[in-house]
Length: 373
Image (cartoon, rainbow, N blue to C red; front, side):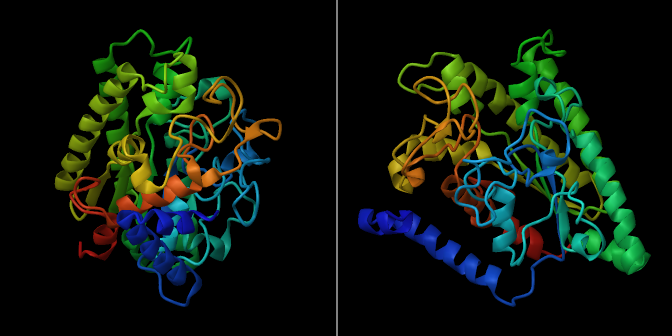
């Protein structure tokens, strides 16, 4: 059954509104309407990777079935059955094409003028994060890649027009999960001897330098995503031997503390960096709200990965052609041990784009891209 039919049958008013918004964004996506920003530049980890890890030697890849089972182009390297959150934000903003991966050979010339996606599976704010997966492009490398793109845009358009495009673009940053999941909480972590407070300070201090560097290269509109409730993902439930899908509160407490610091950093940078505007997009609250109230959003399963291997939560190993894949993907919040389904990403993107201050502070993405700086 299609999920929107299920929603109508359940008469969930909140989800009907969401579907109306999604239909409208789809109309914008396929029409001739102008984009609300000239470009989007996306930085992040596997939550946003469109296929960059296809081009590097890495254990963190998703360019094979069952990944992409609901994506028109099939398994592109996206770590989900369909679209990522940044894919959907692009639709909401009127983009006709998804952002190309920076490392794709075709991402050059006019192909970069609507934006580029630098996100890399297992990447982190810290260069050491994701070390268990070997190859990945951490935030520092993604910034160096953006510097190359920036120079190429100015070469194509001229310096003045290029700088104008860069200043009007949206900068989407979805980082931080792997600094905990695939570093601090991982075995043999190079930062495992630090206290939780020291880790937060290290990650946030590094992030501040990186975001300031991005500002120095011309970025002015920043959407900064919080880290989600990692203690509730199927991977954590599996390895902590969770009972009845109970989230690991030790992990979630650490992430909540980090997010408090991140929001403070976002507000600090927004006030300190002249001409810039930052907004904090509370992925933790959005995902937690879905998990706590699944029927309000048309979900029935919040603790099991739709596609994965290992244990009752299918959380030990990621989605591969050999993994079990669920039949009704729209019932599931999580696609695999780590990542949301396409349906969950629709809700997350909706709250980022249209949400009130419960989910996006001080403004949502629509307000961010339409305000005068």
